[in-house]
Image 1 (cartoon, rainbow, N blue to C red):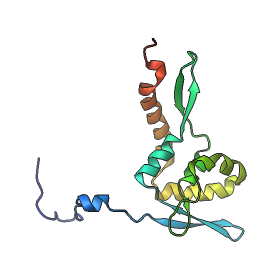
Image 2 (tube, rainbow, N blue to C red):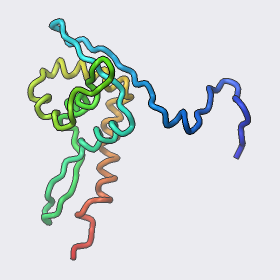
Image 3 (cartoon, rainbow, N blue to C red):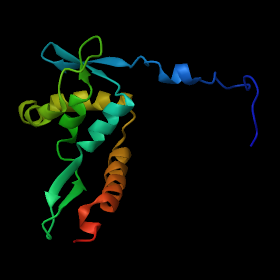
Image 4 (cartoon, helix red, strand yellow):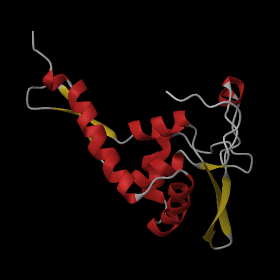
Length: 151
């Protein structure tokens, strides 16, 4: 393993433990929703991203009566919105449990404006969405009760 001493040419500074654990300033973007209305959307923290991704898992009973999970993009937009819509200081306005009401009350056109920004600043592409569902499906299969030995 090659050990680098000092700053390598063309590279930025390496972060130490304190820098890694200090609160990062998250990007906040104003999103024009039309009708003279707007919201703020911000980047998610790592924990918020994990919580958002967990919302994509749906629990159900399989044919053996055991609980299992499957990944779905159902209400993806509303689920992402509740994890990114904030006030001007970056405080989230919605709870993860608010997504069904948001999904059923906001027009698709306005919700799409929010999601376009949220996906961009959180580095979520269409390919990422497909890969996320594929990978989480594989991860959950390994942890599902349907693969466990019955007593």
